[in-house]
Length: 116
Length: 111
Image 1 (cartoon, rainbow over the protein chains, first blue to last red):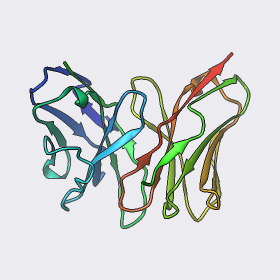
Image 2 (tube, one colour):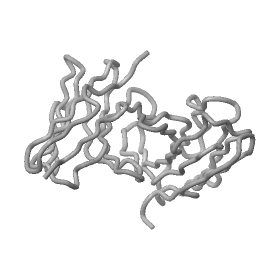
Image 3 (tube, each protein chain N blue to C red):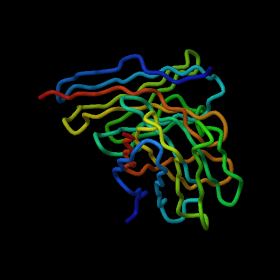
Image 4 (tube, one colour):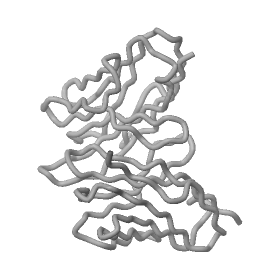
């Protein structure tokens, strides 16, 4: 498909378990972002990848959160020892960043995470 | 800290009327603004963006106005349709590439 793809669309887990969320960006997009959206709230920035540069991790809420981007394409967001407050929709976006120009971020449908 | 917020959490309009959704931002260094539409169960969908060197930009049935003096952004939707019902988010960027989102306004279009 042409859009950003995220999997799974829904994930239910028990408190204390680890989860992995996957994002396939739009082909050719060099930048990839993860955001978190709690119920009825706006989006909270988590992490940003640009090409082969070191990621901007400034938004990660704790050391239980980590993300990787392999081969400059697919990204995985990992949450270790999940807590109930981690329950949210996790959204991935990608953009074609060229130089310093701001570019539109295109979002996937998200993964709805429920921690019981 | 710096934040982006919306004046009205909900807005109800009749089909065919024009809608105006407002957004205030507090970071005067912000140089890029963007509006997204989010329908239930879906990710945010790009509507329109504007850079700080402009004060108005038009798209199909939508217009974004930027007033840097009072740090205010608005989205105008002409001839609102039932399919426009959604939550609308404004977002701003002042450095790097991450967007800072407001909490959203829910637009309900009634027949």
